[in-house]
Length: 390
Image 1 (cartoon, rainbow, N blue to C red):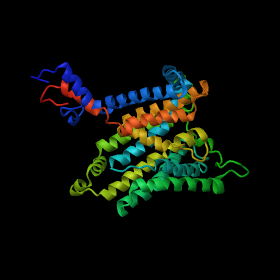
Image 2: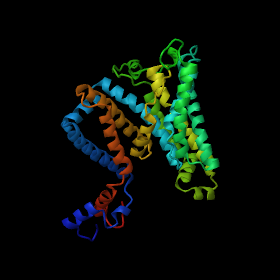
Image 3: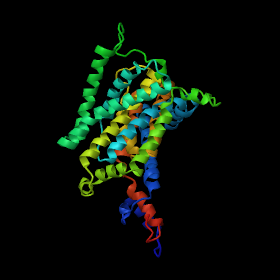
Image 4: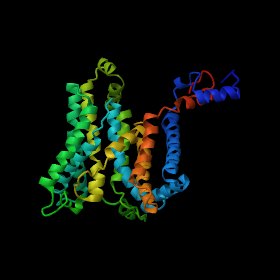
């Protein structure tokens, strides 16, 4: 600091203790949204490596190299990683929109499942339309059904005071049971022994990204990733514009920070809560555009496979910012794809090991996200001239 000598002892003391008011420093946005999450992820991977070494006796470096190669080693691996990431982007954005309004929407998975019913119903009746019309209509149906399912807990929170965490958890179970009933008793293909719908018409299928790129002369064999990925990036941009560049976004953030202040400013918290849940549910519905319209081409049971819950971790890790959510989604997509390659190379590693690594990452970027903040703040306090702040 200006006019103050920092001794090595004082330096180390500040870093390891986080004292001298360091924890009260407001970190620069880039340190808070980039450096701190990266530090948490780095420590999480170190802890994961130690756990892998203790549990199965595998070399952590070899495991890490195998997972990275499996996730990004070639075009097929990258395509599959981005395919998984696409679903997580939609789920993370859904969680983030609600969170900015002060709501913890744990029902994204259930909203996505109900949205699948809407997508299936629409796609099965859109066979006569060309794909430029059929695909947007199928996506719109998914968003409508997802928003409708999110509206109920949103309304109960806004008008009846029923906590959205409790109601969305309950609605996840109701959604699962309802989807199973509809698939088995209404939508299942006659004579089929599996609870799944008829195949969707070809015109409702998301074009593969490799086919789109081939149309402009770029040859890349990107497996699975489809048009939903650029749509997810556009959705992230639109969510950023909504939250930080519109009056509605300002109202949502105001309600999220302080409902009393929002009322004083003439903002209706009840209205904003309902709108935020509608938008959140609509984004959750887009998960089906990637999986059902892009890969399965039919409705299946539990197509979300827990992606809505991973979306919570993605949103936490990305600090509820669309850019951070995109990066966190790619990380989790890489964990799944890299984990599959790892289990193929080494049968000792099953799905549970990957879940363990995901859990450790969630622990550090979620529950322990501020653990290193005092030490990082101490660095800025020591090297920032007095009076200028961080």
